[in-house]
Image (cartoon, rainbow, N blue to C red; front, top):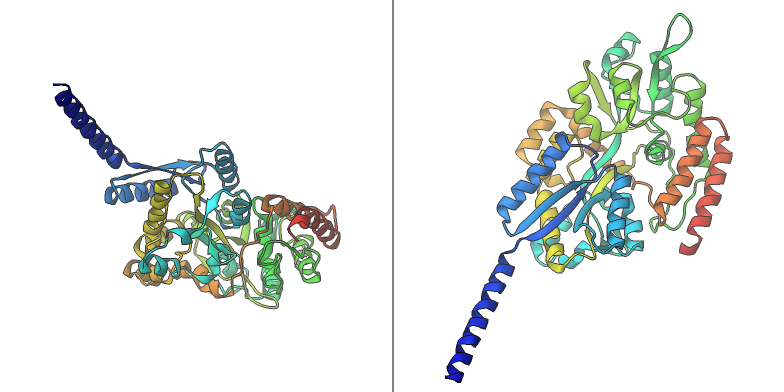
Length: 429
């Protein structure tokens, strides 16, 4: 009798264990996904749509997008969560955050998950210009998603009014200065009502500055992110050019707001603006005039920095969560979805395969402006990034704003920024 009871108990335990195992196998993998957008809207809607589409195809994975604010707010939240032991599983953060995330031991390389030939082909399918900020030390730490370059937008009507060819954008610094002079308007009292050129210097001053240093044939940081050359004569010359546009009265004085620059363009307060290609859909929807999109004017060469966000996988999530994050990043960046993302936002589709899809091909034929940022990639450089990136970038941004507001000369501002950056980076030399 005793033996019979023991056998029954054993069978019940086995059954319970098997049910528990089954329940565990069926419990969806929770994929918390931090995404840098401050409010709901068209972009959040697209991301929600991607999450829903992925979950439909992968019912064993639950994707929860968390809209975490600006890029700066999102990395602070992600690193705070990492330190407290509950990080997101994946997050889209700036490509320039790569060194910071590695230094904090917060992320794992994507190479660990690329097991099949198809995985490896996907990893090799992204534009090389975007991989410059995604790889270091022979490993891939970020997967390009929300990527961009800076482009120039111009108001064709105002060009016509000023006697300029509305279909021909300035291609050199000399042409830019000449066009901006002709496009600047003043009222009877001598107050400027329309500036010829506007380059924002808040939010991402260092990034917009690269639209001047790159054409002047100089790179602000080495590939290892351990050294900068802010005091290079070519860097100072680029800053002097920016300052001189303001002194000539053809560019707004002082610090120009990043966020209001598209609005100034819509309101004809600025005839030419530099901003991200990520603003293309916004400008297309809101400009009540014919506009052009062109590459950044050159000086010694052509070129613009790349920008935008990559997918990262966080180290403290479980192996199952990390595998799910890899799967999600791969799914979202497939050519058809990368094409959809580009059309809905204006960001650059991250692979040639996306531009080869019938949908994006047709979109590019109907709206050639959508191809400018992609066509600029061969001359684009990596967005400025170093170890201790927030602190080093702040030193540069402070220097730029000091020169633009006239509190320091461009040479003094860049020499001071160099000293501060050298001090911050001395442990990485």
